[in-house]
Amino acid sequence: MILAVTLNPAVDKVFVLTEEKFRTFNRSREVISSPGGGGINAAYSISALGASVIATGFLGGMNGRFIENELWKAKITTNFIHIEGETRTDYVILSKDNRFLAHITEKGPRILKDEIDELKTQYHRVLNESESVIIAGSLPLGVSAHIYKELIGQAKEREILTVLSSSNELIQEMNEVAPYCIHLEETKKRGYLFETVGDDDKKRLNTIEDLLNKGVQVVILDYGKSAFMVANKQRIYKVSAPANNLVNIVGMGNAFVGAFAHALGKERNLENAAKYGAAAAAVSGFQMDGKVRLASDVEEYIDKITLEEVEK
Amino acid sequence: MKVEDIMTRDITSVGVNDTVARVADLLRKMNFTGVPVVEDDGNLVGIVTEKDIIRATLPGDLNELQEMSYLSGLYLTELRNITKETDLSQVSISKIMSSDVLTAQEDDPIEKAASLMMEQHLNRLPVVKEGRLRGIITRSDLIKAIAAGKKLIDKS
Image 1 (tube, chains in turn yellow, green):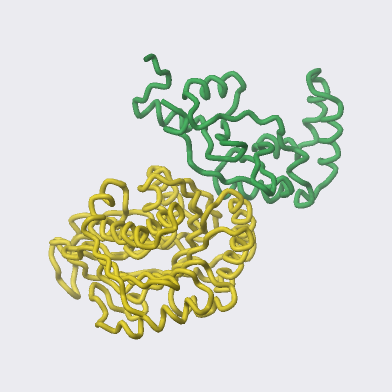
Image 2: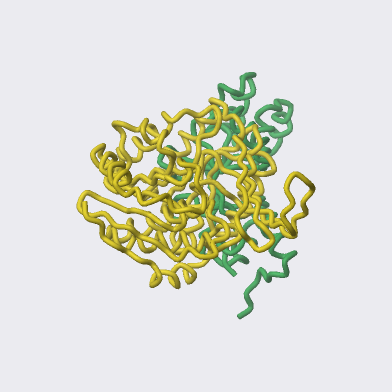
């Protein structure tokens, strides 16, 4: 069983416009709503690949109910803490020919202290049957980065494989409590979307080395448009998937994380896990709602993944 | 058709040491009529319903219950002790939950679970695997399945 933690989930709403008219009224020809947030996107990958996954975090209001219902349809088990606030909505705007135009996100509700305490209680309970834990996505208002240390620390005490997917700023606060694996989205950090960020491999390798020296065993660096670097102390790989005609890139990184964590947990083979991660990311990017739903879709992409070892 | 095909895949539960006040608030927030009770290690040990909580706060009921021969004196004594407490945030859910909880397995046929729920007048049945919650099947799940044209009885 894999536990996927999303502290600040969202309803992802994708609007496909009939035409692009700026600073004026626009109509959408289609609106697609789906559950979103780091751990949830990872959970979809894991469930599609046939593994058991429990999704937890904070949910509230009608958005929260929508998310739970959709997760159940995807055979994802839920154990969310129900909060007083309303779960946020994320907006993705696509052009009429499905080109990515904009991504607008809300901060989300403020989590109360007793809701945080309840999450910790439920997490402690569910850890008993978890082989690995993925903690992914942004922090909601009212929750400090210290929670990462607590959740990862508890899992590590029980020798449960831990994966943290977050921004570089939050990961820098980890210090002494290093997760087994870190996924760092360079894309978001730099604010670029849909562009591979230069050829600054030297900086990427420095980031990877820095994290490995802090006790992280595996690093995934996500630098946009289906391009990833995956490394452990012995090897570093560049892994990429077909990237033409991507539709919705918002959940690709965490789709990678989910499939990667599942494959790594099964075989502990970095190369194979990286291929599955990249294949899942590609599948996610080609879907309007950004969700991986079928194992066959992922399997179809495995042969199209390029894996290249990088000299240290 | 099996239980896993229509059950609600939610494992929300309360701890055996949680208070009645806390559980009542949870039922309110989640619009549940009952919730499974687990130990710290996640093993299912009971179930608590709206009825259990309401009974715990209505001492008047005890006089009527006293007349019902199938209730043991010990149970009524416990209820009296609880209702003397006005602060439900000090009362443990373990004092009012049902410990004798019936369950279903994910691969049980639907008709088995549905029949059990009807015979025992249950609104919900926790679904377990090796003692741990995997979900819950409720009357609402059965109605949804029927409304969707699904057959509860497999005649093959």
